[in-house]
Image (cartoon, rainbow, N blue to C red; front, top):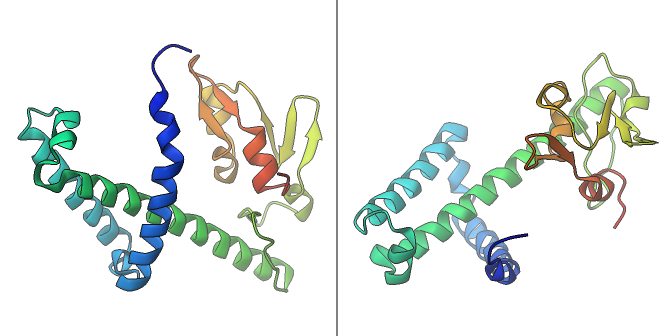
Amino acid sequence: MTGDFRYHKHLPDIAAADISKVQEKDISYGASWKKRGGVGAFMMLCRKWDRIEKLASDQGYDLFKAMKDNAGDIMDDIGDLRRYLMLAEAELKQQDIDQAKADYELHNAGPISMAPGRTVPRFGDNQDMASLHPSKTTSGYEWMGARLEDNLTAHSYAALPIECKRFFHLNEQGRYSFDQQRFKFEILGEK
């Protein structure tokens, strides 16, 4: 690995502070960020970005200089944007879980419960319950009718069900790597 990654040691502290602050503010503001739906939430993100862009442009778009000088309280805006993005992603994840539970109950005439750390994938009428249970293969896993294995081409990645795509990331070779650890934690409940 090349480059200086010493700043990585600060990520856990930033993330922990964000979680604490976002929960406190979201409760005190009554989840107002999503009051006007997805378009309103997007516009709120745009306003934060517009302010950051304006403050950075005043510093010749040198973001680090603007941050160091804390021009116009840019650090507050950067933190707010980061936390609003966390809220948006958390809300989408909860919507997916709620939809999956509703789909399951609709197709199976009964409620389900969620274990902590586990998600239930959304599925359509053409999938049976067996496809919801992952099975180990020689090169990865099979789940939701898809083979989840490392080093997928863009074409193979595009064909995956959307629920599976969160377990992949684009690698340096332009292919998609399968994150088995995340899959094992979120779907299999393994630590």
